[in-house]
Length: 524
Image: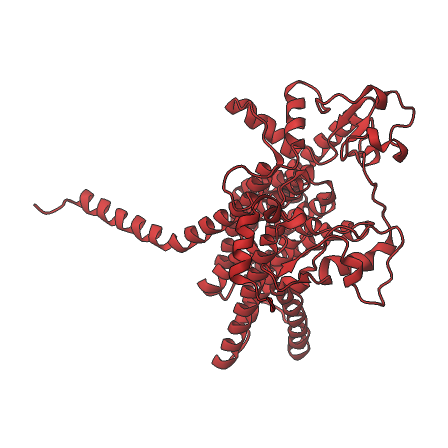
C-alpha cells in the first residue's frame, strides 16, 4: 500500500530532523568533551568528592532566605567590642575575605550568584550547602554554551563565511584557552564571581547579536531586552564590569537607533530596550549597597577583612606585563607549564620597575605568551586599518545611489557593532584591573573572553584575505598552529592544578602516574 501525502510529509520531516541531528554530532561531541575535562579539573581527576575551598555564596544565599542581607555567621564578641575592628593589628580576630560593618559580616562580591542560588534552593527545596566550586563549574559550563552560541552566530553572519573547521577550532580555543582551565582547578568564591560575570557578558553579546541584525524593530526589542538583562546581571556579579556594561548598552542602543533610521522616538525606544533592564538591575544593586553599608556606591571593599587594593597609574605597566607577557614557569616534569606563586617579579625584565606597594606574590601567566591565538587580534586589526586607509586613498570618497544608501548604512552600523562590542568589552573590563596594586591569573578571565572573540573575527578575516591558493594555505596553517598551541597550553596549565596544585594535593597518585609517562627529564 503506497503511503499517503501525510505519511510522505512525515517521512520527509523525520529525514530532515535526522540529517540535522547528524550535523550536530561534532558540536555535541566537542561540548561533551570540554564539560568532561572541566569536571576532571574541578574534581582533581576524582570525579566525585570535589575539593572545596569556600562556600561564601551559599552563606549569603542562606542570609537572603532568612530575610537579611548579612551572612548568618555571627562575629565574635571580641571583634564586636573593638573600636577599630579593621585595623590590621586585630587580624587574628578577622574572618578573612569578608566585609565587616556594624556588627555583621557581608559578602563584598556581587550579589547576583547568591541571589540566584537562594532562588534555586528555595524552588527545589535544597537543604545542603552548595559550595563555590560547584558554582564555579556551573558558570564556566554556562560560559562555554554562551560562547559557542555566540561564535556560531557570528560565523553565520560574517562575509565571507569561515570554513566549518575554523569555526570549530575557534570554539575549542574559547573553551580551553588559558585562563579558563587554570581558574577551574580551584573553584572558590573568587572564581565563581569572575566566571558568573564572564558568563553574563558573553550571554549578553549573544542576545544582542540577533537584536542588531533583526530587520523588524519589534523583534530587535525582545533580543535587546534579554541582552540588557544579562549585562545587568554581569555588573551585579562583578562590580569591575560595570564600566563595560555601561558602554556596551549605550553603544548597542545607539547602533540599533541608527539602524532603525534615527529620530527622537526611536532613540527613546532603543534606549529603553538596550539600557533599561541593565540600569534597573544596577540600581537595585546600589539600593542593596545602601541598605548594607549606608552608601549607594559601596560594595564592601572599604570594610574588607583582607589586604586592601590600591589604585594608581603607577601600577599600569607592571600589570600589563603580568596580564599579557609574564611567562609561565617551565619544568621537564608533566604538565610542563606552571603558574607559580612569588615568581612574577623574578620573571620580569630588568628594566621593569615595580612599585614597592605592588603585590606580586600571586601567580601570573601572560595571555600573549600562552594564548598565541590572541595575537590574531592585533595582527588582524592592524591589517584592517592599513587596508582601510589604502583603499580610502586609492578610491577617494564615494557617494551611493539614494536607493541603496539606507540599506548600506544599516549594514555598516551592524558591522560596527560586531567589531566594536568585543573591543569595548575587552578594553573596558581590562582597564580597571590595570590600575590595581595586585595582579593575579583569575583577573584575566574578566577580559580574556573579549580578546578571544576579537582574535576569532580577525582570524576568519585573515583566512579569506590571500588571493592565491598558496597564500590561503599558509594562513590556514598559521591559524591551526596558533589554535592548537593555545589549546595545548591551556590544558597543560589546567592540569598543573591552578592556584593550589589540586592534583598534587588531592590526587597525587594520578599525577605521579602521568609524570612517569609523559615527563621528559634526563637523569636517573
